Length: 380
Image 1 (cartoon, one colour):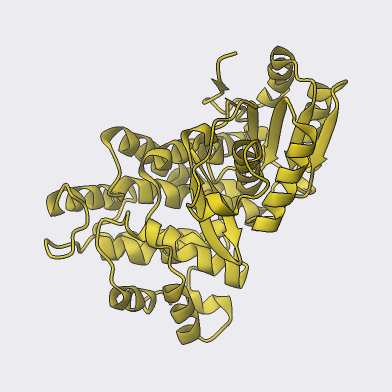
Image 2 (image 1 turned 90 degrees about the horizontal axis):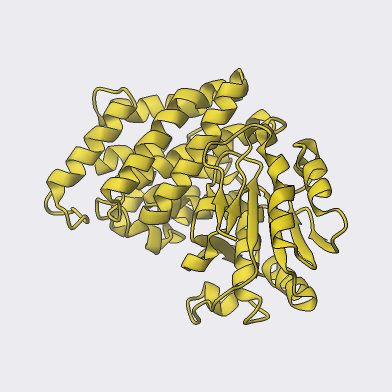
């Protein structure tokens, strides 16, 4: 059966899960779900109907940002049952965990050597159906997944990571509380903006990213404060487009900073990324010949940064930063590092020391330890 993706984010489309399951005709299913949102979203009723009569093992209540022990426990479950189909229903952590398990479990009892880059993933035959219940990460569209080892974030990347089947149903996001909607929506917007200026971007990925930025920037305030079917569907599309964009370009400096903020201070990922996005936007807009990291040159970087500023409706980069930070506040979150609640010097030092070098290298303007510290000092 050919892979199927409902790119249109059709309300009620989760009901098509039964058709996919019947065509695969699995002898057993491994199901990954989030917590209370699995039932509150309406996903549980649809999935229960789709898998009725098939032996199922459930890995439920997947925690945000799964640690290595969580991944290895799920790998053990897979190796014990050898499922014919994996279904992941939830946010980015749920889908990332399912992607990692289905890729690694046939070959190893632990994800550690893959997270550390010591081994490469092998082939996988178990089909994966991904059904996101948040509009944020775009994990259903990417070839990589996140694993935390001792609080430090690692990515495992392989083309076989991409799910075989995807259902995008905006109705599954209706039950998410405003704080979750805000953080996940900011994640989508930040991913799209970072993808647009990434040194790995292409004309095609920038087209995807532009569409995602426009949708998220237009609808995020409404989906948090005045949600309706149109804004929910728009954010669903924005998140998926952003996922497809970063599948090509990867993310950049704001994501490089975010992982420490999330792991050490417990902030939702999207909020953590948004804290530094505005500062990095202004920093990148001042790229020069001396610090340009994009092989296409400083003129290219200036063009894409001007595009981002224009899409955000601002006159210049400083104005775009203010526009972005104002949006973060309007959806009920604080873009200042001081809001984390620990001394600012300590916070900034910890973030600078824990920066993800891989994501930092994708940034169009080169960063040194000194420039990182200086940039973080402006996030107040």
